[in-house]
Image 1 (cartoon, rainbow, N blue to C red):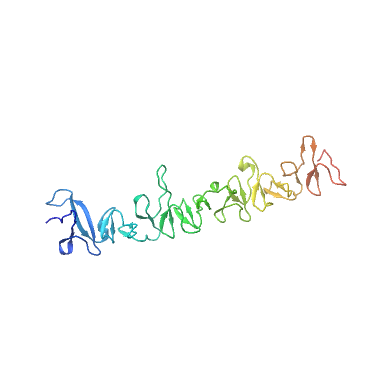
Image 2: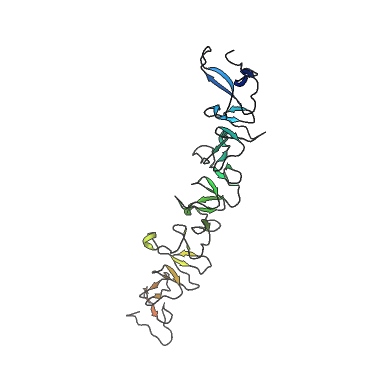
Length: 308
């Protein structure tokens, strides 16, 4: 016959002994295709045992468990296999991850993102299970939307991202959590922190930990000063009253004593000024010993309105 029968009990052409057999032997795979064969009608169903596995053809994988060429590898039971062309494999190779979402069973180099308007989650490559997951399984890893991987450190490029511990994802600084307390993107740890690492301060405008707090020309509104009085390293618009600190514009820091020739303004602004203020008829005088502005000079000194 020109073609082995393919019905309720399919037979496959086995080339080594030119016979029709019901199951292909080891290292051969049952393949079923539509072909044009001389002497048969067009697009005839052709069934044969093929080897090597690459003979299965496009969009098919050689399933060693079933000994068939399949469009979808076996799983999840009795065996768990994934398509890595040309074979179905039990474990995806290095830098590939098993994707089982949306009816596929493939090893992919990058787990797919979610699609807007479609019930498909964002997926990330998990280094322990070697699978695509919607939430990282490996401890102390975070889902990085830029690399599509579960990583121990969030990526810094092309966008600077930071780990947050509510959903265990990598986020830009503006998306760092604000509850139960505001957090900031810290470049030293690549984490969202409520208290920035030593030498940096939480900037509420950029939501980053910065080495110098921003001034009005940067924010477009207010100058910020670094304050450590509460035990938190923060950028504040007004330095605290207790302890008494003043904003020094040259360094954008809260200082205990303003450097000469400046004086600490004890009105609402709490900054270091060259001339003490006159507010609503109240005159403030520059007190040299403490370098602050006062309404009543200390014993042995007198306020002179013309110079303040």
